[in-house]
Image (tube, rainbow, N blue to C red; front, side, top):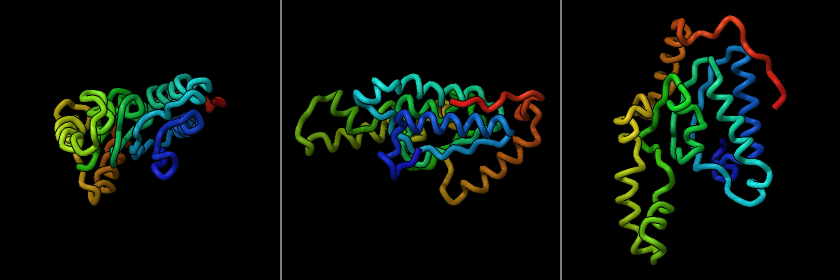
Length: 186
């Protein structure tokens, strides 16, 4: 996902492209390092008719099937099904972290508060959004529940990922099987 393009949402094209990349890396034994900033899947009639669920499932399946070491760092947003798809612990990610600024939730605070409390004036929703974000959209809750392995400061990210890649390369459980799949056209 690319936060500078469509705010980082996963659409049909990005899901297929990412699935091809994950499968390619897995086929050649290249570890996957995923930097996550994804607010969700792109909604809309065109995406629904184009098969966003089917194409999003390709990405989910590619990460789930990958046998190379999988590391991920949530840098900002990780919402809903898109969070699960992007190499989460739920897909057997080996090392999963978040920066302190990471927001891991079903949806963003503003959307959640609007659904829970209904549409009101933006001024009245502000304190509710802040309360919701503090209570549900922070990485500390995810760490408590085991959804991430820890919270990294941005300046220590490279060092920790390098240590984890070194550990993964010496761990037989994280080594690739003797026979890998091919790189089929997706």
